[in-house]
Image (cartoon, rainbow, N blue to C red):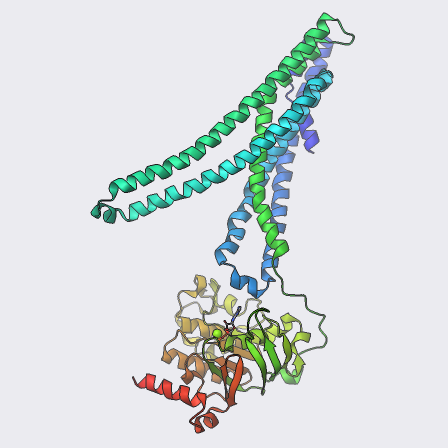
Length: 557
Ligand SMILES: Nc1ncnc2c1ncn2[C@@H]1O[C@H](COP(=O)(O)OP(=O)(O)O)[C@@H](O)[C@H]1O
Ligand SMILES: [Mg+2]
């Protein structure tokens, strides 16, 4: 297509001039060629624009899909260690350059390239001896453009780096104007501003000069070409060499005159394309190099059976040992315990004692280095992660609601009827709240659920978990940022609604778990106590009893 385009795009005016010299009959023929070239050119330009737009969108969509896919499958440790701004940048500015600027500038680059190629080919056709001049000039051009692109890339980097301090300083000056004046630092700030501005201008000046350097050399190339063609023409004329044709010499000359502009356009569009390609490079780096969770084995059995579905799952840790990385000390140290179906377990312990790690290995966010975890007597490593995580639900400390309707938030896949959703809401004490919103399940939740309190959002998470019929519900210090009253509401909601669910509650406050069935007390990655709260309270030396005493003191004071 590009070839067709470039053939039809050749500026046909010189050819037209050439035609006028020939006989009347030929003139008509050339005129028809000229007109058909013009029409063909319009058509091919249109097609080129369409294919580029279409191909650009298709490619960008594919890249975005792969990028998102790779991010969704990446390991948790990557998300822990990477600032979200860096990821957002890949999805905003880099994706924008892939979506929008790159196809545009690449289109220009290809058009320039083929125009130049067409011009050179035609000139060589008109005057084959022109090749003698062309080859050395092409080599010269290659080195010049290489040198220029290296330089201009660095200069561009420097000018963008030197520009941001100007903005920053200006902004700071404006916002701190009264302070600056009060301390009589005006001259200092003015001078600093001059310094920054002149730095930035120096970089831009350098970029301008580099451009002039290039265009001087390109014009030299153009001049040498024109001179070469003219010289060859003159020599052919003087020595009356066979086959020389003044009209063809004129044709070549008029094409060569436009070469300087084409060379210039080629370099600048090439540099721009290179710059936009950085976006593609950064996106593909994410697609290829993100650390992924390893692939699951094929599912080895059907996990849920009818009778089991009605109950919460049993959980068993067998000598579970885990390290976050080889050079760190163990976060979980030979943990062994069993939880019965539908049991409500509370976990307490100092910060860093391994409570969250206990859940991380249950969700298989981190792999065990030793031991096993069994859910309903099935080793979790033999399940697919998808199945495993479907049986689990978590209410996080910072619950997340999407912008959208209540129904979309509770039942994104639309598996449930209105009645089911209503009954889940009722169990979570949310029915009245939803009623006040006016539009029932179609009421809107604003972005991140800002129109609800943290406690209400957590209740929505609970309703979500109930609808999904998760067999195990986990809370990791969910109620740490919540007042005692709401904490109690959430705990009663859980107790009312989750009679058929095994619940693990990691508690920030010991009151939260006082009426659990059993309590686990953790310390440095080990379980130091595991019994019913009543039994633990009976022995006053137990850590749990001590925690409760401390809590009572703090409540009283
Ligand atoms: N993502 C992580 N990478 C490395 N070490 C971690 C990570 N998360 C927790 N740890 C370490 O594991 C230990 C247990 O932490 P954690 O399970 O979060 O304790 P808790 O939830 O009881 O406060 C701590 O020593 C902590 O520094
Ligand atoms: Mg924790």
